[in-house]
Length: 122
Image 1 (cartoon, rainbow, N blue to C red):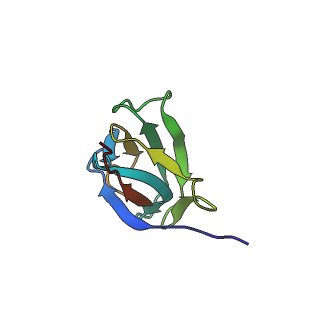
Image 2: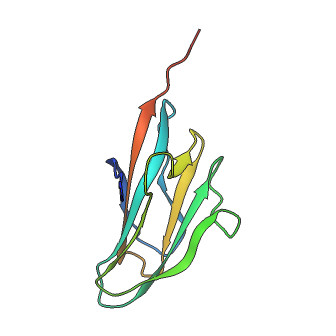
């Protein structure tokens, strides 16, 4: 049984250039699990998307790549999702998700997930 967990929209981004940009940084008081990522190509030409997860900064290169130069066909989407709870990408309070778009604005990324408030114990 496919028990797909999407959660809430955490971030949505369309690049204005082909550089690697930070698209999501969780608030410091939340634990976050990314459960679904949708990359939508809104153009009539194919594009390439790269996705990065740096859990302690903003280094977006081959050392932090989750996918690199992945083809997204014209007028289509690419979806990445977890099959159930705790199967997603856990992002620490100092972590970031980065994204590049070869079309410089033709791809839109939407990130969904679940979050939990961190309470300090005395």
